[in-house]
Length: 212
Image (cartoon, rainbow, N blue to C red; front, side, top):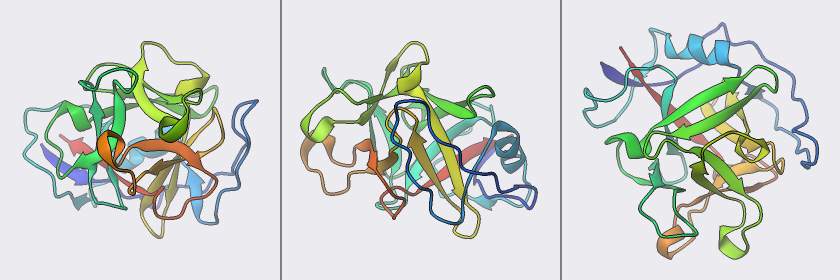
């Protein structure tokens, strides 16, 4: 199988923005960004016209089309789950890998019809990604793969911009868009945090999948 970069087909219809879950602060979505549901995502993974992705050989990896890798467009690095980090940052998500090499950069995007949201399950540790809104300082609202079940902290809205062919994630917990912290230093350099009110570069990603 060959890894490919996802791109929207002509079948992707624009869908209206709806507010996040109760308690979150709704943020306006810039023009051109559309919500993507499970059926649309399936259409994209099956699009024969998708572009080839500059990934490592992953012939031994999972074959499910809903298994995706995320690449930050700010630093061109793939998002990894830091499962060996010590507490409290165990499982933190960081865009720090030059290529997709295995499960540390893989995520299952699980769609929930009732809420029209996704839960992201890390293939590195089989845990769901949560937004740590109770953390403080530089780690506030960081994304960590640490949950064994899905609740409000683990729900995200997925957006795509057809003209730019870029993706964004919004937490339903606080209504904020996921950002890659390019200017951080130390162990949290390139960490992902749900902390932005806009989509403007640091919040934009590529998505990759494995095509059978």
